[in-house]
Length: 287
Length: 326
Image (cartoon, rainbow over all chains, first blue to last red; front, side, top):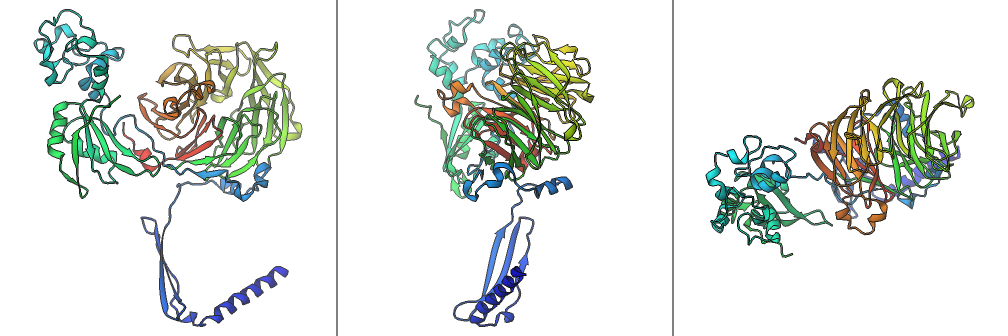
């Protein structure tokens, strides 16, 4: 009973407040709520008088976001109403035990979406496929073909030195003394001057740096853009750790050097998302 | 996706379990209070007070009314899920580790650690419908394997009990007689401690994670090795997606090495693998420290992970997760 009285007095008090205004609220059109539409955008149109007695239309646009589509069982709905117990019952509102991460976490793919796992590894890096001999035993060291023939039966045997896992530009340095029939350790192939650091850098070869990207370019966009030039082994867009925004540059690794060259010649200066892309060879890492 | 972070535990997480409807998430940690959360928004529903030691494992009955927990305080306790009240305490002479309700919730399997002169054991207890009739007597006690038994679960039709532990062998026991029926052989099996064991949604196969840096998928009846998923870190937890052909594996190096390695080098992510192709699908980062517990929501649309850092992270998948093409 007491509560009811309190409520009515409250109501009256509220009405009084409004009477202090113009008392003309009944003249205003009613509140209209549109949506939410398929994008979850809800629009609320309200009318009120401002301080000077002018009629003002207030449009509020909000986005309704569904967190998860869940079909709850009847029992689960009942459980929703269960009273808190244990420590949860005495929990103060400010304890903030449950928080939504400020960081957007993505399911990080081990390789660029859309690229085949096997193909670039074999074509781009025959050594890698050699070291993984366990997967397919019969791997030709000459042409890198898997499961077809052994190295000694390779139809491209004569071209061995040329195609031997090095980009063509580097094979010119191959000493003629290298004998096909003797085993050459991987580190010595393509000339003894090849050092360990150079070997490691090979993984970063055919890497193309793309700068002046628009902020909403994602890795899939780059994959689409560069994928037309040939097989791409890695796409990376630098993202600011704090803001989650793109930092405006990225790297694309091609399986074949000539694809990378073509991409650079075609895409450098290409207009993409209102910005002019700058595409160049990535500088090798200093350390 | 933006995971929901739940900071209810003060010590490392040990185990996570969803109820059958997928609306409640139970978490166990090395602090002494198992906690229940709403699985959609991560709100804490309650805590179960009464254990006096680390809680290693829990299971919830099919009707989400009973919870069983196994703790290092040498007890396993039955709880009323709704009120947090203790229903019954099973006392042991050594720490309890794994607990699992049978299909039908009439039986429970509880494993105990080797302690003092005692060897590890698997106990089968009858769970009475009426709490007043509950007794602590074991229906069956199985002894034999050396070292801790980290997980024991019921096999198909409650006919068998599947166990795995420190001796790296997966064993299938007859749940009536306690006889050893099958044993994984050394060559195909794990080479180090089995840290986790989870059944698929239908119970036809199960996944074991081991500190030998691999997880293996086995047939529940024949104990034939189906698949192996290899990672670069010890596996502490694993789970099978009930919706897609995915498995998720989590781990990290020992807690003793955590302080000496960078977080990025530590690779504390939950790794998704394609169940059939055994190919890595991707990783979900976030925990500071190894992942100790993983669980999939029974609807397959979210999963949660518990870490050495004391956080439970609840991930609702984005729509693109369901369109991943291999």
